Image 1 (cartoon, protein in one colour):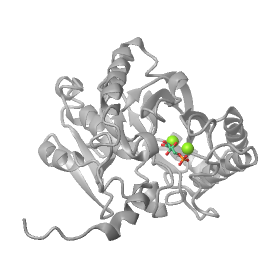
Image 2 (cartoon, protein in one colour):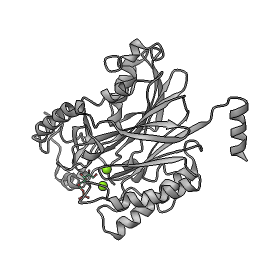
Image 3 (tube, helix red, strand yellow):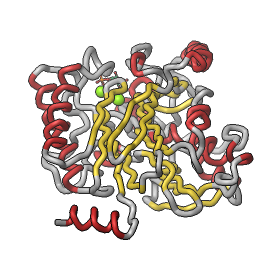
Image 4 (cartoon, helix red, strand yellow):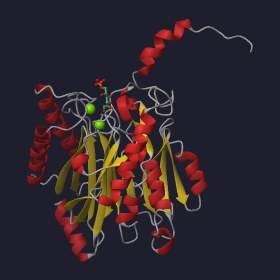
Length: 382
Ligand code: F6R
Ligand code: MG
Ligand code: MG
């Protein structure tokens, strides 16, 4: 009935149908340590989402993986935070986790922090990036998935894409981009958020998002209110109160016709920025843009990596994907990243390869330093 009404409205009054893109990810077990999602776990997810497709719960899906994380990319018409979609993701991951446990895959069920589903996967372990949009006549999007890093890895590239004309030529050249964008930033310490407008507030925005361990870009909007990008900002350690694996993030960005061109979006990843999350979630390393083929981090459990999948969203269907970093033009970025790996690895257990004490709070390091506490004595006046 609701569907018929929606259809009638769209025909008679020109009301555009909305499509929701939900990207929900979790690490439920992997092969040979934290390296790669086993094929049979992907197959379990495929069966689960195929069934949901048949039942009309979702309109389309694609399952990707980056390292030890499974990324469910789904389209539907139910809006963001929809219980049916979140339950589907939860059940899908649960089924994969059960097989992972039976087969003794590594860290089986790692990100399934809750016993039972309670309406929304947020706060239960999986990471979520969702976007409800009115499809444009042609709707290109990029879906990003990372491994061995945290949501802060998107601060720098999203700033470049939506606020830096040295990255995105369209901010100057295209009148449809010239007004700039608004950034929604989360303070993950205080659980607060702020909306900031660029280019007007570029310096203030940078004053916050440069401190990327605390301030995270959650969403980017066009000035007319349309959503441009969204990142999963779920922090596993904050949910569990201890180190349980990392918050390897996912993100969605809209491209072209009033949004940055796909190439402007990808250009922001050509510089292999240093991000946290390498080895034991305790080290900084360069974020390498790789093809799906190379999304299996092995060297020192890394280095951190990111894949990008390009789709056309077409009446709720996902056409594609294009494996966007599978381009020789990113070879130099990859080589550069590997050089940085060699350099930074030589710091061994020292900062800045090692994260700062605040960032290490939720790793296993405090368990080691704790036992030295009683041996400290006051230094006295210098
Ligand atoms: C997991 C990760 C890895 C692990 C490391 C130790 O995504 O980043 O670097 O932290 O392999 O893992 P455990 O403690 O499971 O032996
Ligand atoms: Mg893992
Ligand atoms: Mg991972």
